[in-house]
Image (cartoon, rainbow, N blue to C red; front, side):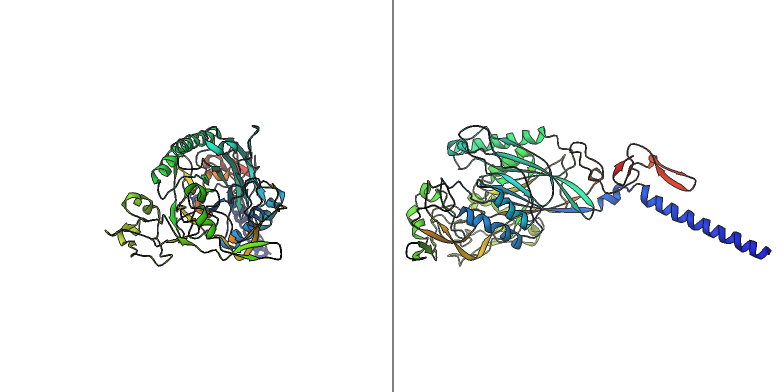
Length: 487
């Protein structure tokens, strides 16, 4: 009998020990704090596409705005994986049909289109599409402008985006803009004032320090010929340019893109007749409709020649310029072991050319106009080396679009003398910015400015809030939370 009693009490002790260990482990993982080290080990990628889609109003021109816009979502989805956000310029014809197509492709959330209540102006054509919920948006319209740009509400669109992956959420702040066009002294002054207005807008929003802030847009500032202006705009925004990589080294490239020059640049630069001649032969769609096919580029009047006069563009690239066409002279750009680690390029003593000798618009320049920058401190800095890449986005099969019909403000004008066979989707190539950020302690608590709970761990925020009594761990204090609710 005594033996049975001893076994009975031994069993009770084992049961008590098991309950104690189980309850302690449960409350440890349920209520005890996860330290900053835990949070720092969590990272989240963020990929942004900036795209000027050349979607001008039909009263200005007919160059397949609707047909091109309908093909962009699938083209982007199939070409650039895991895009979180798309910022648009010249999306003047944005409507519910446009949004539905992007929604089906994976970007269901949209800001409103940048617009102005001022009479006599058209919308600014800037908006933001997102894979993740947009929990706040805002905008400004620039007061500084010149020429025809003053008829459009150019400015800045802001979106505060909450990305969630596997129960972990993080806030990203995106600013999209379209700046003053052209390279006149007045336009350069306008862009400087516009950048200052955007910087003021960022400060006015009172974004918490430690959150990522990104600037995307068509800055209309050429990195090839005017890198100093790009650097000046970035300084005004207190932002940094990612390392450029990939085989495409221009976002406006007349050697690759038939639409470059269609925005009156060919006329303004004096080669409109050559540009039109390069559209190709005229063939019949049917008895009444004619279209251009098989465009044929001719000799570029201003091919890029990377000489000492504008060599500053080269260090922005992490790869050498490719031989796109057989060049008339030797290509001398290369990397060396010491500079490649820093993403820089060096050159030989001979003149440099990248062999771009054939252009659809012979007089149109080769330019890099589109950017995605990341803000400097006090905002959160990306990990590693963020990158920016231009993508030669085209369709695999040609499609037919109206090529005239000006002053008929509808997608399919009644009177069209010629159509065009296209594979290009815009006169700009999109750029892709790839970033990785840490998920830090501030991401794990409620952000009061947005009232959006985006923490993922429950328990005590501070060690002093953690207590142990009667075999139980519990948490008291302002930093305690249970299942995402503060207690």
